Image (cartoon, rainbow, N blue to C red):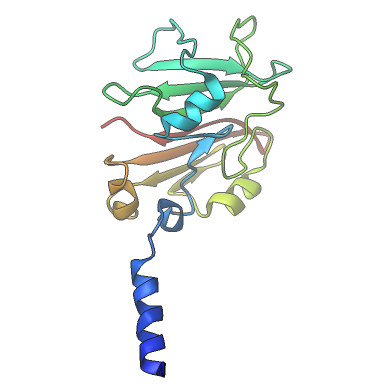
Length: 185
């Protein structure tokens, strides 16, 4: 006969043995990726982009691939940090493309570049705050989120990186540029 103690102990063991996912510990301000590509998940990047993304020759510090959406009204830069595994996307930048920019179209005729948490150009400050919570700092034209050892130590340890950021810029209360991801140490 099974007693209440045995059942209770079994349930406790199952709860303790259950794996704890990064998703459950992810802070509200952390956005794990964009356009079905998760940060530091090369499988998701390869599935979306293939094994040879067109790296730009722009004069920047880190290698990155830049794309435009289907109607060429938005651009997405995917940033790769030195020393990372192949196709490990670390940061994303979404903005309006420069006039005359000749970036390739993102695979799959995507209409808008939307983050995993639902952030996209055109949102209001209030909408971004509702999704990501209270920012670390705010100006009349921007919201800034910073996650570091003081507020997300356990989550950042899973990525072995010291800092995550999100910067959201607004014009006339509409999101016109956002960048987010893991800062290079």
